[in-house]
Length: 118
Length: 118
Image 1 (tube, one colour):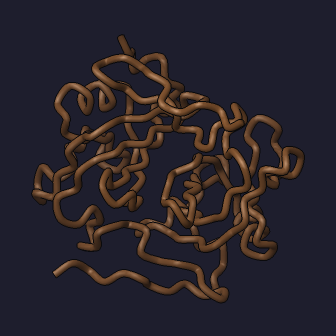
Image 2 (spheres, one colour):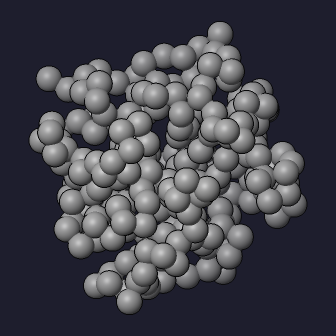
């Protein structure tokens, strides 16, 4: 059985989790999990992070409805990063954009490349 | 002009950088950059990380030949994570696999889902 304790967490007990749309392969966001958030995500199928600002579990979409349904969790070679394939309802970003990575560096300037969802 | 100093770095002066194949959208690896690594990546077009274990700059592929050519750098809404779209030569992973995320959690077990490249 997979044990979340076998992963490598940082000094705060956290591991970075990359959220990727399982269908389009778009990278939607990056957030953090602790061992219990990893366990809850796997047990419930609802992607659950640890909010560093609120210092609490963060069941993505619980208040906004923009939930993330787990498709598959992957672990990297060092066991210190997670790739979470998921189905995203609505925008992943709190700015209402599909992805948090909506700013690109082009010709030395930051440009927004994605509009908020309607 | 984009200034790497405007990004948010952690207590070690680092920001997570997600490497994504610009063509296939496969997530290849996650590593870390400091402000100087961000600047060097943008200036040279060769993706350059900060190696936490060696405490030195790490021009990806410099010794292995498995280089990463920058296509576009993206910044997330909080300015504390980077998505690096790139062209990867050969495997991104030191295990010779295309991606470092070659382990999946399926039915509660860790399974390898990718073979090393020939």
